[in-house]
Image 1 (cartoon, rainbow, N blue to C red):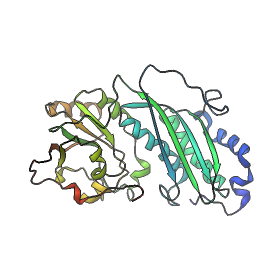
Image 2: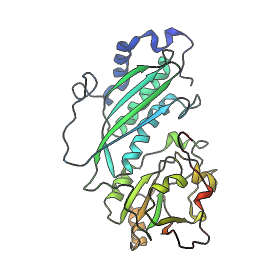
Image 3: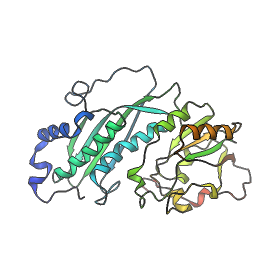
Image 4: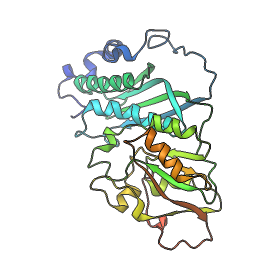
Length: 309
């Protein structure tokens, strides 16, 4: 669905900012609490937490992250879910979100309502209150940037650093072909899986996959090491090939390093009991940069998505 209306009467310009905010409150419904814990004040009031606080931000921009082929409800859902995936990667859970809109005056009210309906449904599903935001006007632009607040789901937050040479490299789910399979909007953020992994000390480092395994894995690789991946082990999504699994991006799966001395059979069995419907795959190991690794992938031959390049 195209986000711009053909007639002014069908656009946000027919309402103006104040009436549009009132409409947004209606569209969000129970996903947004009353002020001062939600929309209505200069700032929202959030309850204190004794656990480590987390914060992340991600946008959706037309036509960079979605186009006319993506239903607006899916756009709203994707905006929140891609932020939730960041929390999952650190073993976190969401507590609140704020949303900044940048709109052309021609933006369709029907499109925007459906966007908010999708956002609200996803917020209710994951128990994320939408507590505030802002609206700005810019010609030719339809964009939304969501800032998500969260906290550690347990005693530990997992970061991208901490992997060591010899550690095993694992990934959840499947990779590649995110656009043709519509996985880039239908994915489920791995919140429960991330929290489970964070409770295991053998999980040394973790991140989510958004720009493709070939690019993202560099952030997880310890100094003096390189990833030695078995190409045949990569879990391919339907219609995906090896290159797509490494470079397509928008997989929103978790990749993590598991301590070398871990009993991997016991770990895999525990995973299957906890998540019988979520695939878990060992891709290889981190090895010394000077080590010979015959039969493994040379990631220098692959490039994931990189902004501004």
